[in-house]
Image (cartoon, rainbow, N blue to C red; front, side, top):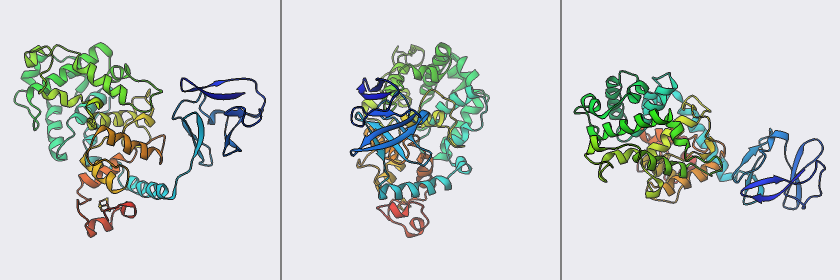
Length: 371
Ligand code: SF4
């Protein structure tokens, strides 16, 4: 059989099981299910049987047991050969990744979510924890612990049974920086409606998810827009829609505003990634390769130091650029280094100016432009 180019981003089965002559089709197969393509005029083996994800879609990549990796992009199959700089970057980031593993969860709101065992609680507590993940970590943990006491450690049950009138009693006087009691009530009201109507935040999110999208940008746009339209906010803000300056918007940011959507991307990382003991991987329908880097000031700054971005300020464009560059290192799990890189900032290990004491011990010293 052979494949001969794109059709709506997919390669289609064309003829029979016999090997065809190179050049006639993009991919062909011999009688032993070995797949080939033509690269720089030479026939190249690209995998056997299920090695090759069929039918191919734009951005698909796969590796052979020998580590050789290919990507289907712009109607062609291309090998991914790490350049020496990329190799160096990957080695350094791998070092960092191995150093900052799950024993550092105490220094992250994700550690709070690990207190829960039921996946329904993990999902709701995760959304709340990611939503409040801004500012100083110890302050974040304090507000999360306060909310945990209010919901009696039963995030799902509390949320699915939530109503605004009781909510004002439960959260009376509670605030975190510019997030006031009424914004917290509005947030729980939205999550409650998601759980009642869709059964889970995941099901609500998946309404705008397309498995063939390059990343989750469109899904996030749809998620935030629909969330802010999901309930009548009259009991909270005295108007059916939240006033523009209300802080409930802060929990449902959108790429359309060029917001990096750090906290939504962080929540998605926690729910989707499944390859280590950091994230939960309880959302199984989303491909981790579609995740987008949760960019905050730490990630933005350090990404500039190590050449992952040309942008100066955190934005969705910066998040996509960083993710795109990380995909060159690991196209299946591009944001695996997020937790490790963020430790440098959160734990005050990376100074804003060159600092010999810190830089000398830093795993990414060899690739850091600042050091
Ligand atoms: S080498 Fe120094 S400046 Fe560069 S990332 Fe590490 S600690 Fe930060």
